[in-house]
Image 1 (tube, rainbow, N blue to C red):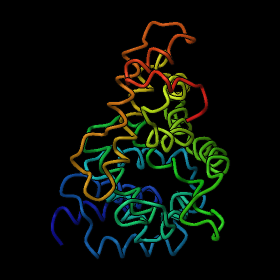
Image 2: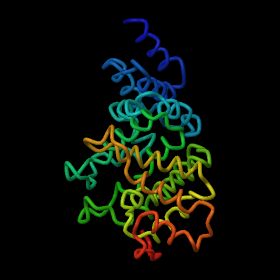
Image 3: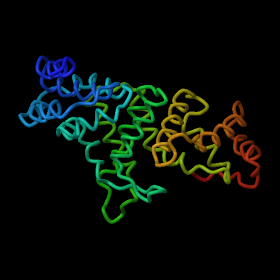
Image 4: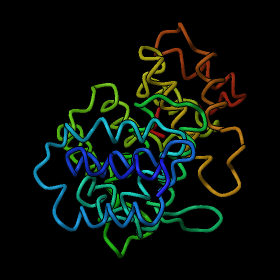
Length: 280
C-alpha cells in the first residue's frame, strides 16, 4: 500500500466513520485524488455497516463543501454514489440519476449525469460556493415527475422549493446559498428561453432576477446558467448567448424608472413593437 493510500485509509479509520467516508469522497474531487477500488470497497463496507446513521448532517457539511469547492466536484458525487452513500447523505440528489430531461443533441439527457457536468463547469470557472450549491440542488424537484410527462417536468418548481429548503435546514446552509438555489430553481430555465422579440418580459425578468438591486446575486445566477448551458454536449467552450442578450438589456435601462425599461430595452433590441409586459 503506497503512502497516499495509507493516508486515505487513516482518514477513514481514525475519524468518525461517516466523516471518513465523506472526507475520502471529498478528497477524490481534488487534483490527482481519484479513489482506487480498495478505497471504494472500504467505503462501501462502512456504509453497509450503517456508519452514516446518526451523525448530524451539519457535521458532514464541511466535507461536502470541501468536495464542491475542489477541482472536479463530480468525482465526489461519483464516489458517494459508487459506495452507496449518496442516497443516505443527499437522497434528493441521488434520486435524479436515471431521470430523463429534454436536450438538443441527444434529445434527452440523464439529469444526474448532467448535474455532474454542470458541477465541473462551475469548478472550471472558479465559481463561488453559492453557485456550486445551486448547481447541486436546483433540479431536485424533477426526480418524481409523473412518468407520463417525461422528459418534461411540469410543476417541478413547486416540488423543488420545499426540498431545497429542507436540504438547507438539514445542513445549516448559508442564506446566500439558499437564496441563489431558490432563484435558480425558479428562473434558470426561463433565462435559457429568454428572447429579444418581447422586451416587456425581459424587463420583468431583470427585475425578478435582482439585476437592479442585487447585482452580485444576478451575476452569480448568470454564471450558473452559463455552466448549465455549457454542460450540454458540444457547448463546453461556447459563450452563453442569453447572458449577452440580458447584458444588452440591462445596460440599456440601468438607472431608469421601472415603467421606462421595456421601451428602452425594445429600442436596444431593435424591436420597439414588442414591448408588452407578459411573462417570459
